[in-house]
Amino acid sequence: MVKRTLGEAMKVASDGDIIEVAPGVYTEGILLSKAVTLYAAAAGKVVVKSDGDPTVVSTAHGARLRNISFEHTGGDASARGRAGPRCLEVVGGYLTCDGCSFTSKVGSAVMAAENGCTVLPRVLERVS
Image (cartoon, rainbow, N blue to C red; front, side):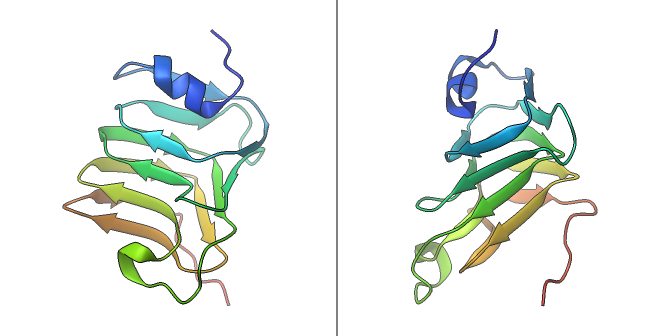
């Protein structure tokens, strides 16, 4: 079943579903509240951007992201911690990311809170 946004796909998804994301730029935030896999149909060709709330908030135990670039482009640079802008926030769940990138123009790129756990194999690199 083809959906126009990632949010629409998440609404109808169930735990264990695998969602293939078509190439393109998606301007929206994503709430991962189910243990689904989101993966890029073509590696390096899927970008998810937001400028308000975090680009991705994950609360699910066992969600997975593969080969997608996530960008957070806005926010108040003076805010810190939970009040600050961020690209990925994992709250009390367990998220595995493989082949993904997370960038934030201001604030944190990745934040885990309330016993959240993120596995980020091969995605962290220093940007000067």
